[in-house]
Length: 533
Image 1 (tube, rainbow, N blue to C red):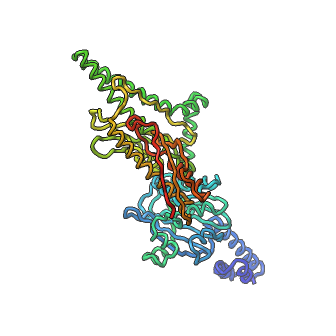
Image 2 (image 1 turned 135 degrees about the horizontal axis):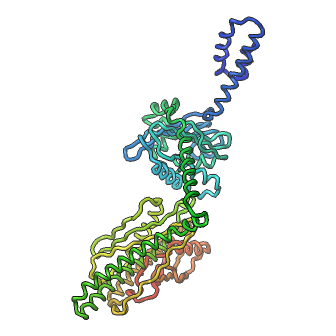
Image 3 (image 1 turned 180 degrees about the horizontal axis):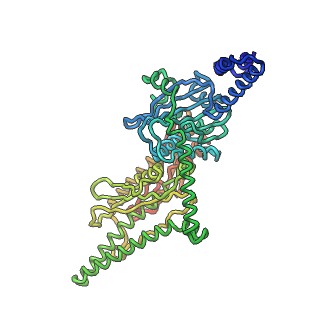
């Protein structure tokens, strides 16, 4: 009777346990021992269930696909996707509220902390185009991308589970992150199922394993996988080491720093101090160069010294003016990427720009440890504006090198103020011959017409319009490429076109810069016509 009750209450998987207990206790025939046997069996099954509750959640899930992430001929991991409801497409799968699971088995010998963090942040940002507003979800994704404190080794296992309305993330069977809702799971799953997967082959294989040539091998590995025993507590070890390091730092701060207020003041002024030290070093170097020049000039006549000084001032002015023009254009063009803000990324991007009279310009990033999308944003702004710089024809230099920088600050710290360099008196007013000015003006006007027309065509309302319409717009820009005036010469007959076109044109501002003194104008105006057919 006890066997039947146990089988009904706890299922077949513990029935064998009860049978073993029965064999052991069969030597006892008294009613007391039979009762004790039954109670011991129930207690044993209860404890086993309790222990199972602390392991990874066991749900009735089916492995529908497996894929290998390969980069530079190196297999980083084998991924598996488990679902409770099969035969769903990727969108229905994400919307489904039943249990689901992502499993990753690391196959690369070592996966570093920095590489892991960059991989997941870039994948999550690329596949989640709509910015997340829930701070809990953002915090969990930030924690997930920073999960690795040292490095992952071959054989480590990561599991992302969604079950009973919450997302749980395990590293080698150890619970690391828990969040209510499916937003965290779906944001991570989109790196496989979204518009920018590791590859189209990866996405096809993860949705339907039968398409993969390694399906049998990978399915067998994932289904019975057990991580190495010596890596079972690696996450706890990382956290313990972090706490110890934090305690050591706290103790050192308490024993060595003069006070909390002074510490905060030092942290706030640290960046200004570094910049000031750099400026002072530059000033000292400049003074040293000046002293060297003066010693060399003592042998020259007064007239030669004056001519040499004027040439130096001219070259220095040309360099500073090129730097000022490009830095101002970059400050106007750069925008802070939304996902970089969400992930708390900031830093100073500094690029050394080298312009040449003959040849293409060179760009060299001074510190590549800054978040890569921030560096790309600055390089894009430089590339878009450097082609419009007019190199000084009177200069004897063959190239000009100078730094251009942009500060991405979560606290909203303003960019360093820009001061336009003063043109030396002996150079007189900047001028160019009339023929050259007209040529430059015509080139820029043609560029402006093409740029504005491109924005008109790209306007959403224009793209979907099916009616014939004639549009004519006058646009004027200053030397920094900023729109000073914009008006319709010929109004569109469809009212919704006006607002859409205006917004599309303003979105492209600022346009390329130009030299007002060389073109001999304060602004360039162009009338752009477009016929919708």
